[in-house]
Length: 185
Image (cartoon, rainbow, N blue to C red; front, side, top):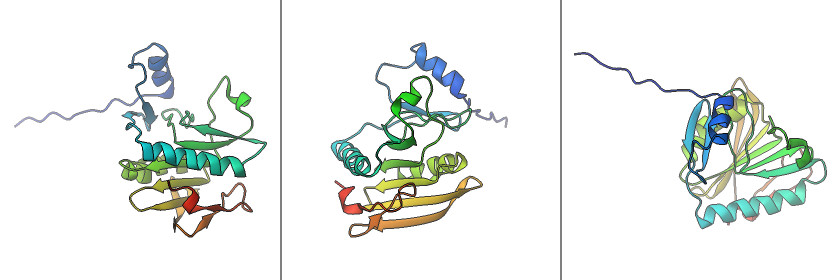
């Protein structure tokens, strides 16, 4: 019996950006390129949107001048990845990124409901390979904040789970304390 192996087409960031600029995708279609694959992002419900606002409020109070908070905007991570994390804190002013997307961040946060496994595995590996030192997953089902740090060889060496009653300090601003309860809507 003959079998046919299915092949997956891997895209580069350059090819992906060309498709976007040429209008290949539907207007308003929410997509991101991760490890050469184009993923459709799930629609946001009200909890997800509220979580992003809670994170934005908390992180804006901690990260001041010298940092830019990017909400669901692309990061140029290697030749075949352009994820759009829910939040990314990057060094510099937003004007630094008029002509290019940032290629790193000091902190990336994903809000996970239906995407928890994707965020824990594929995205964690991508962010670790990119050397992003601080990756947080706001986990709705677990009512917790998962902290991944110390990226080495494509994986995070440190994983901590924080719950309501705990506080977190971003690696870039270690003296700042953010209550986990303030991040969970």
